[in-house]
Image (tube, rainbow, N blue to C red; front, side, top):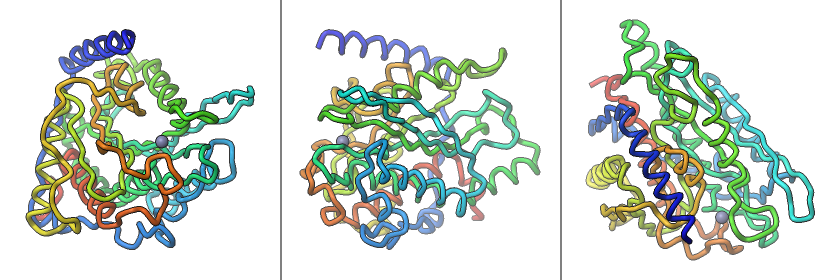
Length: 357
Ligand SMILES: [Zn+2]
């Protein structure tokens, strides 16, 4: 485990350097009226018929028809409901133990302020992996990570009108182009997290993407040296959807963002806008060191990206079993996550600016 602690220390150093050059976003809490206006997605998270979730609850191992169908589901959703979002593919390949090459495709959907030049926007990046484990056969991974993917779709459609409004108003006022305002948002569906034929996760997609972005050098004079440094916060949703989650704060440098999300959750709860009963999932304590769990944030963390990991500890009891299916989800918990993550994105993106109050 020596190499882990060495690479952790390198990551910490990179992060400290990164923090020196990063302007912290102007995070503004939403008003009570705005909080009341956030929707939970309701029936769209129904495991059997819900328009967001049900199509993802199928085995989706890279290279299979189920995997392609889920990609289609994301693309059709953005095409038909969110046409202002642009889409990018980040393709790579993985190799099975037998030597077969399998395509891996990260899907990115994003909205960038219309006034930002190449290399100028900073990105709130909300991510989850959409591939499923090849074992046990027929595994659908409801919490791992079908629900997180559906949550991200809901967040995108919930913030869409405000993003549009923000862009229109900024353009009218001629305010676009100041550093704090150059915030974009990206929804990232990562592929190839799971191994193709073993139990340990593989991180094919996140490793390839973080490397690609690191190597994508921005024009001279850009505020951000490369595409990766434009990620202002990498929020990773994983293993969500089971009842009674507890989410520790995994990372000291983003503990402030974790605390903001926790206080947002507390406000929603106090206003009786959540469906679950207490306690809150947020423990409000930091581990004060880089987590030892492994997930898709690791390749980004090692390259200096600040991350917030929404991963329960302990993991759901159905973890990596056939029981991680629609029947074992707790829908009130799922719908509460929909509100919490949506509210966090709105606060991060400073949407009180466009709320009519
Ligand atoms: Zn998994």
